[in-house]
Length: 196
Image (cartoon, rainbow, N blue to C red):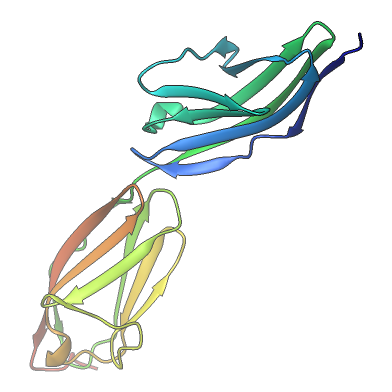
């Protein structure tokens, strides 16, 4: 009666998940006799719990973290063992941090015709979604006088020549699947241009 050592023929894949979402790792494993499978983190076997679930169906082994928290980030190892040997594979879980506005923008009064350039810095895990409003109306990316450029860690807002049309309450929201952050500021316009 022959047998074979375990082999992980489909390895678990790295994944990135937002807070409070489910993370699932799967591995297809062969071997005779059927291998015993453990999922490990930091060298310790993970127990079945109200957050961790382990399933097996026809050689596919699945490990689920029901609700991802920031402490779950790291490497997970699946280990398959039988009397003929063992095999293992590692997959990484990245937990997406919600965005944070690094510094609020001050309320500003500027003269008509002024070039306005504002940078709003943020942190968190990409990909991000951005929304800028003026007086509670969303500013279209193709707006004729208010331009925005999105970078990895900030947004640049440019108004080439300030007029009364661009005055009012601005609100900027950056979001990802883990949450959002908002900052607001007033941009007021004086009627006189600045001295040359």
